[in-house]
Structure formats: C-alpha cells, structure tokens
Image (cartoon, rainbow, N blue to C red; front, top):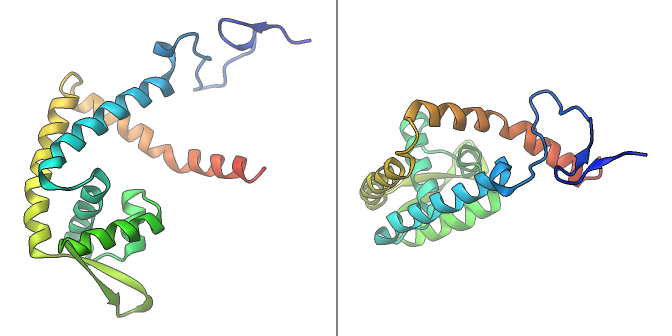
Length: 177
C-alpha cells in the first residue's frame, strides 16, 4: 500500500528524480503553470506590438525566419523554415500562403527538388519585417525588463535545449509506448 501526501499529490517519502521537481502544492509552485501564465502574457504583448502591421505572431515568426535563414543560407525551403521556427509543416504552408497573398513572400520551386518550395522575402516583406522586428524587440525589452538579460537567456536556452527530448517522449507516450 502506498501512502500519498495529499498536499503534494505524490507518494510520501518517494524520492524526486534527479533534476526533477516535486509536485506543486500550489499553482505558484508549479513551473508549468507559471510558464503558461508568462507565455500568455508575452503572447498578448507581441500581438499588441504586431497589430499595427497586420501580422499575427506566427506570420511574423515565419517572415523573420525566412529573412534570417535567407541571409545565412539563401532562400530556405518551407520544411527548413518550419524546422527553424518550430512550426508544423502544414501550418507553415498555410501561413506562407497568407503572407504570399499579402505580397510579403514568394514561394518558388526548388531547382534541386521539384517537390519542395523555397521562400523568398519580397521587398515589401523586408520593409514590413524591419518595422515589425523593431516593434517586437521593443515589446520583448519591456516584457523581459524585470529579469537580467543574461539570466533570461540562460534559462530560455536551457529550456530550448530540452525541447527535442521532451517532444520525443511525448510522441512515444502518445503512440502508446
């Protein structure tokens, strides 16, 4: 018989895995809940910053990502842009179709792979990206101001580095593994 600590929701005396967290007794002790709240607030701040440019957050991320990758690697494929941005390839294609309709990007066949499309930022897209990026950077600076930049980057980079293993575990769990 296992005795469960009702305030913590975990078996009494059970060791917390190395590097793991105890179960939270309150929402303010739950890293996941706190991350959820912070993420929602940050998304609201960015949505407000992007509203004057008629861009959603994901549209901005893909426009800026296509520009960044284009500067480093040449026009990226849609798949490469999705990988870089952490977005679903099908959703990426739909959002790019919207950006293309606005004249901000163009999708052209990849000469090396007839199934792939490359994404080029148009002059209009570059002009809008530059203005929107300034607004996003201002919103980020205001949002993250309470935390020293180095600390924020250290935590976010640590969490970013853990994304692939977490996604793989979640996929295995969803598949019944």
